[in-house]
Image (cartoon, rainbow, N blue to C red; front, side, top):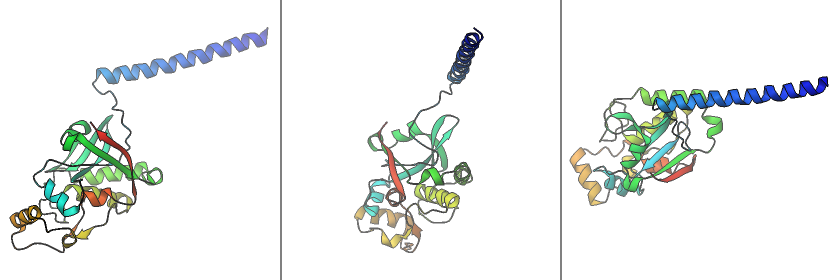
Length: 224
């Protein structure tokens, strides 16, 4: 009889515990919903790299020069339950993922991640990567693709944030002269920006070079 009562009491306590957990979980979700902070569920992780073909005036020239369809990129971070793209697009800013996708060609995007992200992307690394972006917030866009931090362009921000926080090179920098500068569209923009003083030796990194890095793997792609 005593064992039977103990068994019944144990079952009742377990049921009470489950109910308590469910009530707490439901209350948290309800509170987040009423505050407009419903978590945005996406297959992303902090520090994922995101790419698109932009509608900018230089997008076509970038495609010809790099032989890649990707002309813009950024980094994904979850800010209080909302996925944001940290990007350098005059000036450096963070922009809601949904709105960022809408700026690309046909709303298409692809998300890439380090193959060994589980071991590399520790909380400290993620914090440092986010800090590398935050310290550049507000810095104006660099239409000349220089390598210093006085101005900065999209793939430069992504590359430097990764290099400063992980020590890795996601894509290999190369001098401007190693890109394909022969197309008339490319020549026109270069003439407008540099005149006769083209910095052929300036180190550069393109969205396509980062996308094609052997360190990365695709984890998501599609349209909005």
